[in-house]
Structure formats: structure tokens, C-alpha cells
Length: 387
Figure 1: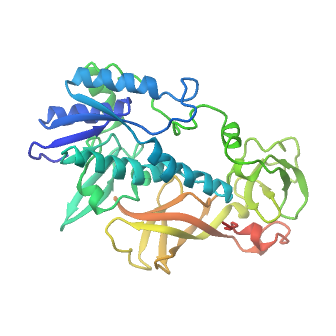
Figure 2: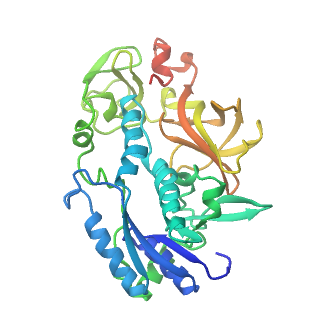
Figure 3: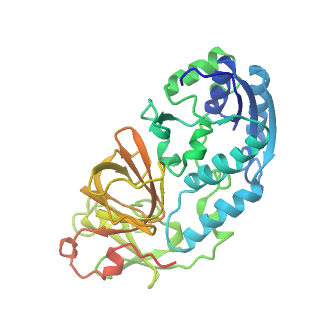
């Protein structure tokens, strides 16, 4: 991070090592730093499934070690209204949402930002691995130096106002350095395991959690030819490309390859499966995205070659963008992409710069003639997009 004048910074402290070191670095740079612990979930908030109580203890201990004040704030009502309600709506529609993306845009960099500014802060800061650069008055979101930890994918819905008031102290350093800095500073959580998933699910069985909010609707598991091969527990429990938990592992057709979820037929309540990781039904040449956000405020140039991810950890895939309007855009890939999933985000890059992206609405599979049997109804080859 470039040297800057002393400012008032409120750091979102989760109790983890990343946000702790972000606060530590800002303090060492001479800024006036205050920590803020956000509580975003209350339903069934017990130690069995959610670590928020221990996380708060860890955050307070770190703040005491660093020598900064820390406050707590409860955003659970806002989280339930802006994030969790959308989470349920998407699962009800047969899609697989990414609540972390929405949480960043609506809670951590909107509700939290507004709260911090009201407290008199100049900036907020988090432990995300990403960078911000200002060019000709515009703020760009860049990938982190540590490519294995880069989190720009989850931040692609941020806008100019949010980026202008945000600092990412960890963007230019590697995770191993973060651990070393925490250890050298004597932070009590220096070896704390990184959190995974989202707190309102925690380590509990995912199926049990969804059952509390959405009714299950079992149905048939079918091949592309419509042959039943098993029963599913409810379409919402499965995602495209899923291999485990199908309950048909004992059935071996053809060359005996494993089964994968290829599509959801919402009209018939059928889960469509194919055999083989590289089956054409799992490959998409293009997709349609909705609910777009372009960080600069302007859409990318159509027909220029960009890179895009349709899932976190994926390498950038060469693509072009077309048909951009207020409703969405089309992304066409140079090479077919595996298990493109409605509800997930497609994020577009130009080299190291994250341009933004949108929510995947549907994807076009390989040609019907490429599919086994060639008799699959079109709405099971393409992702079904009923609301």
C-alpha cells in the first residue's frame, strides 16, 4: 500500500488472522485505527455450528495486543433482508447462489462503510486479498499479489464510492508473510485456522439447514435420454458438476465413469446426470449474465478479448462480451467451460484489473448432436431459468 497521510480507519475485524494483520499494519503505519466486529447472524447462533462468540473473543484479544479500541455492531437484520432472503430465493429457483459476493456488496462495503463514515472514519479496511489503484480519477480493483489467495472474484460488485473509501492492506503481501507478521507481533490468533463457508451454515449438514427454510421435493434422477437411474432429495440440494452424494455410484454404464450433475429440469423436477468429467453436457461455450456491475461505471468494449472466471479458483478463461445492455450481457468463451452454474458469478478481467461481472442466468451447452443419444429435451441441455 502506498504511503498516505495519517487517517482515521475503521477495520472490520473478524477474529481471523487476515483482518488482525490488516489492523496491525495500519497501526504500524501511523493511522488512527479502530476495530469493528460485525455480528451478521443470530438464528441458531450456537457454538456447535457458528464460531461468532469465539471470533469476538479473538478479535478483542488482538485489539488489546495491538493497542486499538474495538467496538461491536449487529447487522443481522440487514444481512437477513439483503443477503439471506436472496440466498433462499435463488435456491428456491433451482440456482446455486454465492452469498459471499452479496455480503461484500451489501454488508461489508455498504452497511459497514456507512456505519464507519458516520463514526467519522476516512476509510474502512478489511483483510481481503486484493488491491486498489487510482488511474485518471477512477479506482480500479486489482488482483492480489498472492494469486493463490486473490479474492477479487468476491469483490467484483463494488463501485467507485466503495473503493474510494476502502483500504486492502494485505493486497501486496503473501499469506505466509501474514502468518509470520502475526507470529512476530505476538497476536494470539497467529495460527488460527482460516474460516470456510458462511457463518449461518457453519459446519452443520447443508441439507438439514436448507430443510428449515425450504420444503424438499424429491424426484427422479435421469440420464440425458430420460432413463431414471435414481432418486434425488430435492433439486436445491445439488449443483452443476456435483459428483458426490448422488446415490447412484453403484450403477455403472458404458465405460464405468463416475456420474455428474449436468442440469436441473425444473418443470419435471428431474436431476439430469451424465457419465464422465468431460462429457459435452458439462461444457458451455457461452453464457448469459444478469444483474451486472461494472466497477468503472462503464461496460467493457464488446468483442475485445478479456479473461473471465465462472467460479473462484478458476484460471481466467479467454472470452468476448457482447449484447451488453441494462438487462445483461453474453459472454462467449474461446474454449468450452466446465459446469457453468446459474446463480454463481461470472467475473471479467483485463489482465490484473477486475472489471466487474454479473450473475449467471443461463449457459449454452455443446450442440445437441454432440450429446449422448441426441434426444435430451432442450430445456435440460440449457440451464432452466424459471423464477
